Image (tube, rainbow, N blue to C red; front, top):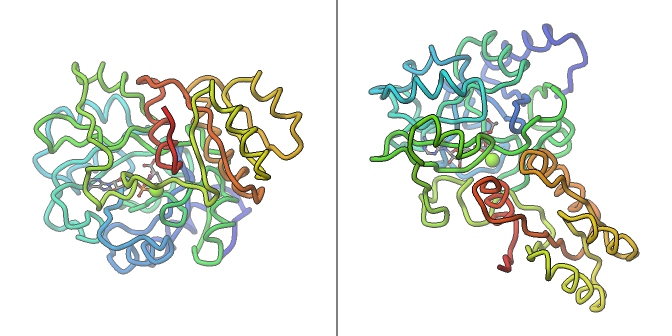
Length: 333
Ligand code: TXA
Ligand code: MG
């Protein structure tokens, strides 16, 4: 395995050849880095599960070069899928559609649906075009952990196991795509993500249903109650309680990391020698972009506990709150 430093064109050609040979390639997207394999090659896809430590049966998103490839993988595609694809692809929207029978069970988790997305990143798009097929790719992290938003995160976590890592810089969106299922009775958001719900509501002409997270199929790892999680014990607190909690833990001798939202909090916290504070941007897209890097950083400090200042509970913050809920063991209202 190596991180390629030659020209983008050469890298992409090498990566496409590796995919054709049944190898794995980690690549950048606008959301997070993906760990890709030829979606039509079950042996190659199996390797992705092994590398991630992901239990078999959890389906993978197939990355395609454009909406023209939808019907290679999906049948009975509703008009709405084409309309949404035209509006939001390439971009952070994954559509779950009815699978064609030939699509490997390993990719779909043997479910009725197949998840498709066209990523908005020049390296990913160049790779998909050069490869010419679909690339099944989960986020390029160990199962249950924090998704990578830089090539070095992939290298640190999976370096020895992946055949090639393409470096396309930091991911612009920073959290995973929004997953919309069009095979339920109503359009249903299975996972909030990089595409805001409001944008979907406007495009569909109605608010999509929201799948209840914890009751969902166990085959959707991104929907397990605990996911996207650092190793350090983590608690979410409302703004008015977080500083008291921090003091309480410090008094008990704990070293604490704080993911703060408001500056005044950070000012007072920074004076504490045993507390590490990361101040997050106040807007949801800015927060999302920095979230996983911040969690990784705090997780690497060897702290006893992480505290998160809870963002507001509204639609704008839906995806960030979803990831924070899954990353924390304790969520105080
Ligand atoms: O932004 C993203 O979506 C990133 C980048 C790499 O594209 N990918 C990603 O993949 O987050 P992963 O595997 O970490 O999460 C994919 C989610 C899982 O929760 C999975 O269960 C769900 O998509 N999924 C995949 N195929 C599905 C299907 N056929 N039906 C329902 N859910 C599906
Ligand atoms: Mg993932």
